[in-house]
Amino acid sequence: MDASEGEPTGRGEQASPAASDQAPAEQGAGWWPHARALLVTLHIVAVIVLALPSPGGDGMSRKGWKNPTVQAEFTAWSGRLSALGVELTAAELEERLWGFARRYVAWHNGAKRPFKPYATYAGTIQSWRMFVAPHRYPARLHVDIRDAPGAAWRPVQIARSREHDWRGGQLNHDRTRAMLFRYGWPQYRRHYRSFARWLAVQAAHDFPEASHVRVRWYGFRTPTPEEVRRGEIPEGKYRDTIVKPLDPLRTKEPGE
Image: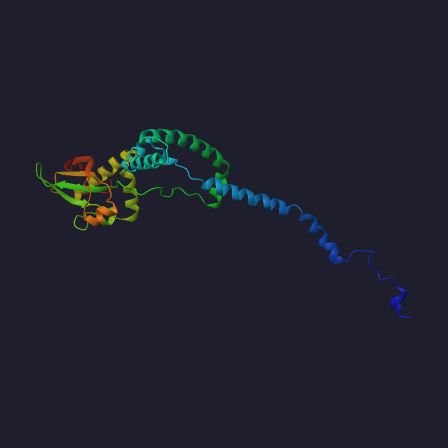
C-alpha cells in the first residue's frame, strides 16, 4: 500500500506558511482605503475652496474701482441688466456689488484658512488672479526733460516707443512693465511717487545739462474695432504729473 494512503496529509488542519503571512496584511489593510478616501476628499475640497474666484487684495480697493476701466464695466453691466428688465444705474450696481464683495471676501477668507498650510506645503499658492476684463483705459509712461529753466520739454521716454527709448532696457523689461501697470492705478500712488523720484535721480546723471524732469501718465481709451478700421484713435489726457529739479539730485548715486 502506498505510504501516502496511510498517513494524514494535514490539509485543512493548519494554515500554510503563505496563508499565515498574508493574514496580518489583509487585516491591517482595512483602515487604509478609508483613510485614503478621506485624504482624497480633503484634497478635492481644498482645491475647490482655494480655486473659488475672489476679488481680494487689489480687487477690494475702492480707489481702484474708480478707475475708468472698472467704471466702464459697471456701465456695461448696468445696460445688460436693464435689457433683462433689472433697472440699476451704474452707481447703484457698484454700491450693491461693493457690499456683496465685502461679505463674500470675509466668508472666503474664513473658508480657505484651514487649507492654507496644505497649499503652502504643497507649493500651490497662486498670488495673482486671472484677468476679468480687458483694460480699456491703460496708462502709458511719459518722461520729459527740460534742458534749461524755461525751455521747452523734450520727451526722452515714451512707453514702447522706438524713438524715445531712454533706459528702454530697464523700463521695457517684462518685469518692469508689470510693475508700471500697477503704478498707473490710484491705490499705487505712493509707489508711483517713489518710482518718479528714482527716475529723476537717473535723469540727473544721464542728462547732466538738464534742469528738470517731468514724469506723468498718458491715459487713453483703447479704440474699438470700428475705430481702428476708420483710422480713428481716441484722444487721451495726461495725469499724475510730477516735476522735479535735477540739480539737487546730482549728489546722489544713480542707484539711490
